[in-house]
Every structure is written in C-alpha cells, then in structure tokens.
Length: 506
Image (tube, rainbow, N blue to C red; front, side):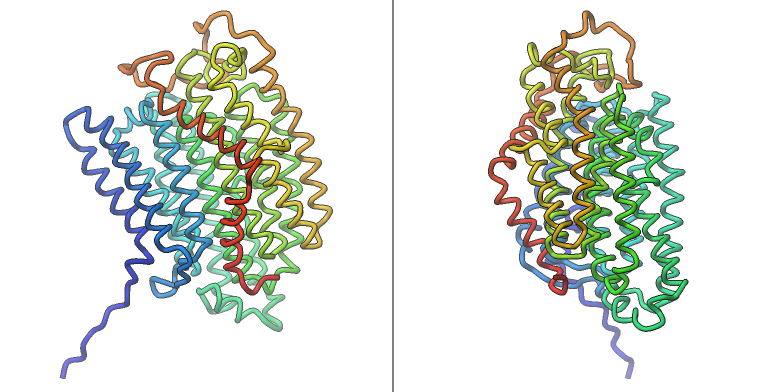
C-alpha cells in the first residue's frame, strides 16, 4: 500500500490577520493596474484602508487566543495581536498622508500601497516569530519594501539617495543578524525560541559561540531600530525619504523590532539575562544621550525627529532590559503612544510641505498658531508628548518605563531617562515657540531650506486644498495624545494583557 502523505495543519483563523495583509497586497496591486486614474488614486488607497481595517478586525476576533502556528514558527497571542493593531493604525495613518503625495503618484499607486501592506505583513511576522528562521524572514519582508518606498520619489535626488543608503546599511544589518542567528543555532542546535532557552545551561551559557551570536543579533536589530551607535543612517534617510514614508518607517519599524526584542531576549535568551542586560543598558544610555544631543540645533523637523527617534528607542529598550512583565507592558504602551505622537508631528510636516516652499524647516511652522490652529495644536501636543510633559500620553509612557526600570533594579537607567527628557526640552520647546511666538514667513516663495520638497504631485491641487485626510490624521493623533494623557487606563490595560504573555517572567 502506498503511504498517505499528510500535510501540516494550518490554523487559518489564527493566521487570518496575516492572510488579510498578504492577500490584500496582491489585490491592491492588481486593482492598481487599472487604466482609470480615479481607480488608481481613490479606490486603491481606500481599498488599502479596508485591508488594514480587516486585519485589525481579525486581530480583535483572535483576542485571548494563545496558539503556535506554522509548525511552531509563529506565536499568536495578545502581544502579537496588540502589535498587529498598532501596526495597522500606523500604516492607515501613513496611507492617508500619502493619499495625494508625489511619492504614491510617481511610484504608481498600486505598487506603492502594495509595498506598504507587504511591509506591514513582514512586521507582523517579525513581531510574532518564535523561531529564528521566521524571525529572519519577517525581518527581510519588512525591509525590502521599505528600501523601495524610500526611493519612491524617483525624480528627486534626495529620495533616491535615501533609498540607496537604507539599502546598503540595511543589508549590513541583515547580514549581522543572520550570522548571529546562525551562531546561536550552532551553539544550541535549536531554532525554536523555547528550545533555545532549554538548551542554554551549564558550560554552554559561557560559550564564545553563543555570546558572539547574541552580540551580532543585538547589532542587527539595533541597526533596524536606530539604536546608537548603529543609528548613523537614520537622519539622512528620514530627511531624504518622502515624508509619508518617513512617518510610516519611523513608527512601525520600531513596533516590529521591539516585538522581536521582547520575544527573543525575554524567552529564548532569558537564561543569559545577566550577561546581555548590562550590555543593552549601556547601549540604551548611549542611545538616549546621542539621540538627544544630536537633535539639538537641528533646523530640519525631519532630522530633529530622526534624532528624537534614536533617543526614544533608548527609552523603549529599558522595557526589554529589565525582563519583567511590567517592562514588556511598558514597552508595548510606549510603542503605541510613540506612534500616535509621531503621526501628529509628521502630518503637520506633510501639510506645511504642501502649503509652502520651505520644506520641512522649522521656519515652515512659524506663526501657524495664528492662521493654522488646526495644525498648530496637534504639533504642539506632539512636541510636549515626546518631551514627556504631564497630561500627555508621552508622560505616562515614560513614567511606566521608569517604574519598570526601578522594579527591575535598574534605577540608574530610570534616572538617565529623566535626564534625557530634560535635554529634549531644548529642541522640542523651540518648535512650540516657533508655532506660537514667532511671525510666519514673509513669503512662501522661498527655496526649500531643509532639503524637503512639495509633497503634492504636479497635477494635484496646491496650498490648503485637498488636505482633508492629512488634517484628519493630525487632529485625531493630537487629540489622542491629550486624551491618553488624561485617561491612559484603556491603553494601559491593553498593554498589560500583552505583557502577561510572558508568564515565566517576574
């Protein structure tokens, strides 16, 4: 008798958010091939938003499911589902910012939005990976579309330069990551995170092969998360990329990478905590200092936010270092509020790039408190929130991380967070001052001061017309920055559910 071949069991329900993203990417690409311009410029982004909404709905449907799928390569639990929802919201905001942008127009709308959905799918895989092979697949799937998206304004030199720089540096980071994962596999003989944790004992815990692998994995993930000293690419790429792409990359990449950090280091490598935690604490300190000092004196809002993102990555790393459920919850909470605050800031930058010829210079937002209050308030709240001012979402995020640091016996790292937040006032507050206390530019007919370029395609309406979706993102993100600073409990509960998946942690 012939043996009956039996394929692996596939849990389609658990994988439904990922299936929606990948299937939606293919559908968006096909619809984008239509000859009708209305279909390409209106239906394609609208369909992309529907796909993201469907993925979010499916994530909510799977809430409280705790499953391993795809031959134990992926973990579907509250952490993965929470991060998926944050990713979907961040991607939806980026789609709205890019709706009438030159980048989407030049790259072809179908291809542009399919790349966005593909990158989100890779981020979802990375955040739920519990196998070193799945981790690397997710890492590459999120990276390759981003390389193309950064260079999507093909007629602008800075955009092409941004894509090339990100490709080169990202390739180095990928090489270091895969080599480190290979060394970990070589030392333990296991690819599953739980099996790796069980294999690390006795003399293996001090194996040079294992420790070298951990160091290389840290370097590879740090490249992607903009953690110093692996952050050098960040200011140039953020400034050169189209602003909607910068907004998307700035927030969603960190969500995925820190999800991978939490799973890899707080599950697979938890036995080595006493060795990697001090090294990561040193990296976090360097990152906070370098990011905050580097942002001082920047005249480009995008470069300033790039250095700010470096400092913010240092804050988030604290939740990984302490290896507690509180630390994991604090990291998830801060990832969510960081996404909201950054989207408010980038939405205003997009709007002002379209309204003036000043690019992303701080001069472009001078005086908008008088004539553009619906842009002034969101940017003000974003700056105050990123600085950690009370009554903003950023304050509770930093307070949560400091509490985790103190509870995990890293009180000195909590002090570093406070010092970093104090330094950050020196570059966040001048933006607020420019908004409310400085006169607006005498004329908008000036050359771009900071390397930015108008975001609208040539045939699109200019000035303040055709910006409803950008204003919507700015107002909603600014409102939630304030609302979560006053009533943080719903998001705190969500973050706590995500952190509780690490049942073995203190």
